Image 1 (cartoon, rainbow, N blue to C red):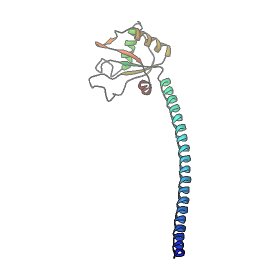
Image 2: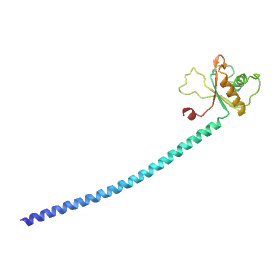
Image 3: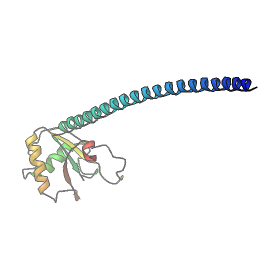
Image 4: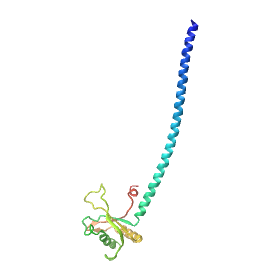
Length: 175
């Protein structure tokens, strides 16, 4: 009887032992797979960090190129949309304004590469005038106009206060 009981326990113990070995093998497989996944994740994270740094570098370079392309630009804020001649010939209006800033005769020529109204920002109220952006051909003249405009706080066109700014990339202004 004891022999029968011992054989029964032995069979059951062998079955449990086989189950434990099978579970041990499965656990080992899972641990190896987890280790592989962790290695892959670490590699992906390192690659992502490298790409993020490269993206930040390229964004800084792009911002620099954008600002260098705008180095001859001035942004004039406050000239009313209804100011005489501003729609038809913004260059003439800006020439008159800049000659007043420099104190020179109004008809003194200033060479512009271009001049136009900026697009209306979404948050700008409809009654506020859009900025005028101009590219002055001569960088030194642009710098002189900018410097004197900063000193002269009482610039007006059609009774409206006008300010002159450096034209900078939007990403620079947000920083």
